[in-house]
Image (cartoon, rainbow, N blue to C red):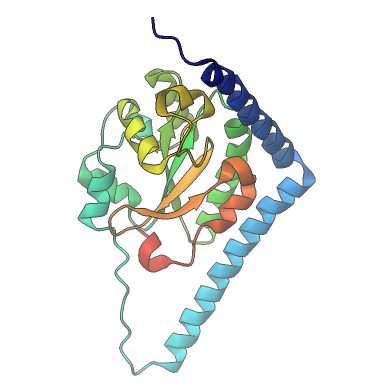
Length: 242
């Protein structure tokens, strides 16, 4: 049996220790008053952006009644839809959605991949704030959809988690492709995917554009907690609304 070099075997537990420390710090921040204030600040910013957009649209309409306006095409392209297929509907077990069904579910929404795991304390502590952010955005007419990219231990765990959170999900046997594409995986998966090139562990979000399904924004919630949600480009309707 091939034995890993001593320096590598020493580095693995150290890396896991650092990852655990960051998780503990983020959990403490999320449950603290500053953490709750940060979430409220993000929600308030989203509300302000929506009101500013509404005011601008209203003013433009009232001062340009005789000039035809150009409607922005904010529908996701076939390339964007196909970049995600197949996607599993969290409410119907492991059944993959057709392209038409997926497009209907995402239409008019902002879309992000959510990298997470049920065994991760930071993830489960962060998710109530994430759901609150989603609800606040919906109330401000900025609906969102999260697609779960699981780092759970089994497919059954992944499907159960997706259903509990009300999210669609990437098929469990295809999550590795997304993790390698965006360089996001849990610390415990570093043995499989490597330590080099990893830009984040879980939780993390990748906001997707509606042209090719490419990355529009990276939300570093593992290191920044709820404050990272403020980096979502909610006002980029031309690229961000599917």
